[in-house]
Structures are given as C-alpha cells and as structure tokens.
View 1 (tube, rainbow, N blue to C red):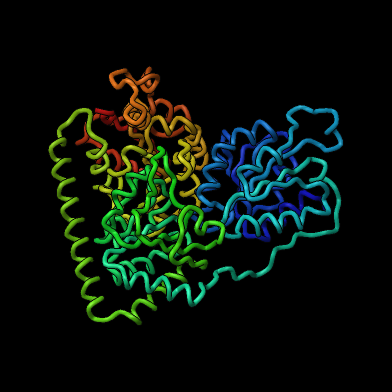
View 2: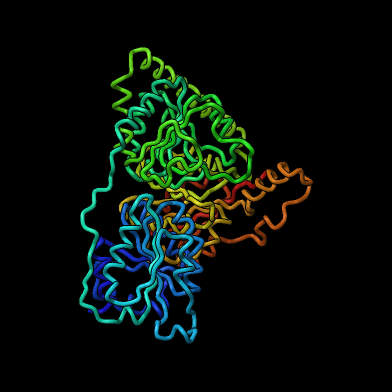
Length: 553
C-alpha cells in the first residue's frame, strides 16, 4: 500500500467523516484518493482560512476530531489566523498541507518552505511525514495529541513523494482510551468547604463546561449554593443557560472591570481556564483583595496559571462538579440551604429588574431609523424555531444577542475565541454540516463578514439550509469604542475623528451573495425583518439578509 492509502485509512479508522479543504497541486495524492473513500466527504472552500475555521467549529459542534487540508506554504499562511482561533478555542483539528517532493528540497522548488516551523507556534504538535513507513504512527499520535487535554490543533506536512511511497505498515489508532479523570477526594472536600463557608459565591464558567457536557451539573451546583454564574467575555459556547435566574452574563475585558463586577463576592470558583483574556492593562488583579479562588480544570496546564488557589482540582468537569455538589449537599445544614435559597431569590429579582430596564431602554429606541441592533435581533428572535442554533460574531451587538435569544443548553450557541474576526461566517458552515437537522443562523457584523465572505460560495455549493444575517452598521464600531477607551486611558486628544473605521463605499451584501449563488436581500424597515427571516427559513437553502442598523452614537 502507499502512504496516501495509510493516511486515508487513518482518517477512516479515527471516524473522520469530512475534510475541509482548499485544494492545490501538492494535495493531488489526497484528492485522487477520495474516490476510494466515499464515506469521507470533501468540503471545498475558496480560501484556506475558511477551511480551518469551518473545521474548528465543526469539531466543537460535532464532538469529533476535524480535518482540514490546505496548500503548501502560501495556503498554510492564509490559514494561520483561523488556526490561532482554533488554538484558543481548544478545537481538536488535524491540519494537513501538501509539501513538495522532498527529493527537490535543496533546489528550492516553487512554494516550498518549512511548513512545520510555520505551524508550530499555533499548534500542540507540528511534524512532517518523512517516509511512508512512519505515516501510520504519525497519524495515530496526531489524533491522540489533538485530543489530550487541553485539546487543540495538530499540523502534519505531507510530501508528495511520501504519499506515493510503498509501505507494509497499515493504519493504527491509540485504542480505547478512558480520559475522563476523577478529581482527588481531598480536593473535592476542599472546594466544597470553600462553597459552604461563602456568603456570596461567584462561579465563572469557561467553554470547557459546555464541551465536557457539564452544564447540567453546574446548574445544580449554582442552585444548591446560591451562586451567581458569569461567562467569559470571549466565549465559544454558552456554558450556562443565559436566562437562568442565577446567570449574570459576561465579564469584561479589563482587570479593573472584572474586579468591580466581583467585588461583592467572597469566593470565586473558576471552571476551565485559563482566565482571563484582557484587552487593556490595569494595575490590579481581577480578583478582589482577600477573596479566595478555587479552580476546576481538565488539565494541570491550565491550573493556577494566573492566580494562587485555595483549592485546585484537575479532573473531568462533569465528574468533578457532580462530586463537589454531592459533598456540598452532604454537609449543608438547614441554615446554609435557607441562605442559598435567599441568594437565589435575590439573583432572580435582580435579573428580572435588569430585563425590565433593558426592555424599557429598547422601547424608547423602537422607532429609531436606522433600526438599532437590539430591535433587529428582537425581530429575528421572534420568528426563530425553538431548536435554532445561533452562530454569533456580532461583537458590539453581543449583549443584544443574549438579550433576545434563549440559549437553554450547550449546542444552541457558538461564539468565537481569540479575538480574530471573520471566524463566524466560515464557522457557520462547520456548525451546519455537524447539525444537518437543525436550523442554523449566523449573526455577523459587516466588517467581520468581509474577512471570509467566500464562505457564501461553499454554502451555495452544498445547498446548505443556512441563514446569514449581516448587521450592517457600515463601520468598524468596536474599533471606535476601543479608540475612545485608548484616548481616555492614555490621555490622548479625544475630539478627533475615527481614522479609517468607516466602510465606504457602502458594501452591497445582497449583490455579493447573488454573485456567489446565495439568495440575498437587504432590509431597512424593522417591521419587514421578521417576515424576511420567516421566508428564508421556509424556503430552504442558503439565504443572506443584510440588515441596516445604527452605528456608534
């Protein structure tokens, strides 16, 4: 057998169902092999960044190891921004690139470069197949490393001649591994004791809660302890139901802001990690002085990276949370249970007050033209089916998204990690392919969408039932907000205009969509938006709806 057969057999042995790729000449051995593996679907994209982002979101939405294939040095370079997002998201991806025939390496052939070195900073492991004899073990290790906690991408370079070499070493896997580890008993007791001693605990839930199917256990623990539950500012998942009475929403992006949010709490329990992804420097800790911190994570690598811990547990989050919950329930007395119940009631009342205030503010702007992002999202949410999956890269409209939609469980929401824009429109492809029986809607800003707009072509090519909603404020609104913050923080002159942050000439997304085979429509009237979304849902296939919304005041 040849190296390319061992490669494809390895994918099949590890349960791979699709490859996201942008083909090139050095990928010919892989492409020519696809006819012999009809169970492995090739998803064609028009840019390598789209292939990597789609694979990352597919991995998150399916729970499988995803595979992406890009083309030699320039193609790998095109995918590195998306690879950064996949690394930050902890997506188990096997990213491959064809490499020139190694017999030409001293001749500096066209497009040849050190692919392993290019990918290494953004992967858990980066390697090149040097012979067909090592292909089987190389792929076995790649899948294992990608799935070892914390999960993340692996890169493998595939030289053309190695793919065509003969070998008698067939594909192998790592075997049946049971990786869900239980936390140490004394650690469980220490965490439970901290919760029992706390008069106002706070829990910060990372993406790992959703990934490890621990949201139900977290909900039970939050209710049992009367804890407020926060999300990270940037998150790929919604690890805790956003309309639960104990939900307090997302934390900010500066240590001082986080510290002020947590200032009334006397315990912080962090789930997952590491924490936090900050934007601006503050000369304070995000944790208020004297407040103990506990952490539960699935890997020692993410444990106690930035904070001294009063208790740190390494273990599967679902198993660990259930264990801590059992320990709390076993030791809680009537006084503790009554206090926890009172905290739950107070959190519910505060949440209701916040929703009422938000509704009143939205009502005051209901007739604004252009419509506000909040009005647009409320109209869209009004006609969404109960089982919709939302892919969110709205950025500055993020609070409006969580205010309009009810994300009751993991898998209802996918955001983005790392801060690089353009992931969402490509990621929606991966989410839809992983969930063919559920409606999927993307919400993206216009600036973000333009980074990987060619994703529309793949949606048309595959005739995906996928709705792309583009909130077009015709500016980089988040950059204007950040310019304001920069000027304030560094005492810069504040009455200047915002340089290079307006999208002029105005982009015509409906025309862009039509040019790539997607039905496109622009909506300016908020009263027409719900019916436009309803029509797209009923019609099937890919649709783009450009919604003209207000920009920065």
